[in-house]
Length: 580
Ligand SMILES: Nc1ncnc2c1ncn2[C@@H]1O[C@H](COP(=O)(O)OP(=O)(O)OP(=O)(O)O)[C@@H](O)[C@H]1O
Image 1 (cartoon, rainbow, N blue to C red):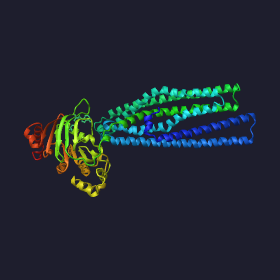
Image 2: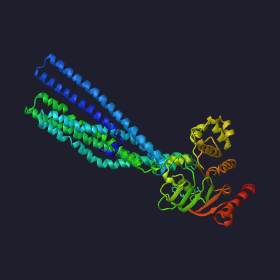
Image 3: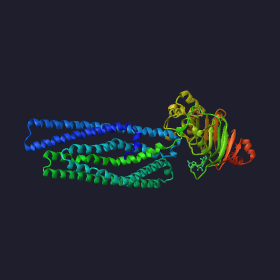
């Protein structure tokens, strides 16, 4: 229960833990002093030997002892609070920085709800370990030894009996430790499962309502909640049982000490005041350890959470090792690239392709052939690929995520816009941009007139930009991407499922960017890729053809078949009026 690794994460808290123990120890010393005074008072009253001055001195001593104890307890609580703040602050900062380093593909390694739970409740539980459990652990060793060293001068045997009974409490704690460890692991797994399910169901609530399948998922969540309730009840039952056991040992041990005291008193081996001192202090041998026992279970829970936090902090992000580079541009060279999301299924197979700087290239192929996977690998979202991806002769994995994000921009078919004003959403891409810059990009994407009718840059977007149409969302996302001014732009189905005007606007901008920036276009609609310098055709994860539109048509291969089929369909739909 002394987790050295965890303690080394928050070394500053140790100072306050020591101060908490010291304050508790001072409180104990003055408690002993007041007990001695009370015992003396009782003996003097019993024998009728006390004078008024003695009485005044004794009462003053008792009052001063109580006062100092009170001050010491306040100090101990304050130190423990500071230790707890230190711990929470440090752990949450470590987790936050780790998440930043893990970057956007963090959810490949841990689920969002898992992270929310360990950084929320997990840290709260660990805080108890530092602010309550650790000070109490040291204090419960110090207190019985202090009491023993003082009381042994009065009667060694009785003091020894009390001291010997003390380790029975930690022994009982060790006995339940094994059971509780297993139980707490189950508890946390069940807790994170419940969280995962909850977030997923909440995200898909509209879909569930549309298909009227919410009852099924409701039942599934109830089942998870019931599992969590059961495991929580098991934890509580285990805690209650062990508390009862510890109470038995603590009060039983004190009772044994009192019996030995009374036997010594009846043999007249000790005086009345000494007997009273032993009786009043007997329970003090056990109370600190008994209290430790009740913090123990919360600390155990904290330990389980600590393990999860340690695992998160130990994750290899790869990005931390990268090199910061403010400007990345140059040719992109992909050589013998193979990749699978799982070891069993290879999604990309031995792909080699060359993308010259500022060229306009397209990647096409049937659904599921691996186009978006190439885009994700170029953006550095996945690291465990074979082969090499180089930008400007440097492996993509050698750059920090920050450098990649500064220089490369991906626009997907679903882009996230935040709840807030249009201005706030645009400034995400470039904090320095002026209102004039923002109006300029809005004009470029054909949104200026619409935004102005809604109050301009202060127009507030709802959650998920639900007060914009699909095409408007895409155009605003494109405006944001243009403000970012990257050197490499990847458009991954950026014009899927939107109106024809928005598609034309976006396509016009892609054409404007080509020649000035490196543009990588992934599109199902082959009419959009016709003007590309090079078109790469994928089939089942392999690069099967490359060349410009005319070369590929002449080859009469996969591209030609796809293009002819699509053109025929579009001609049928538009009556031959719309297609490149
Ligand atoms: N996160 C993931 N985990 C596991 N498999 C994935 C993941 N993302 C994609 N895949 C699989 O990898 C393969 C290639 O997917 P990818 O999205 O790259 O295809 P695509 O060519 O872009 O398809 P589409 O044109 O439909 O967008 C698919 O078989 C898909 O099931």
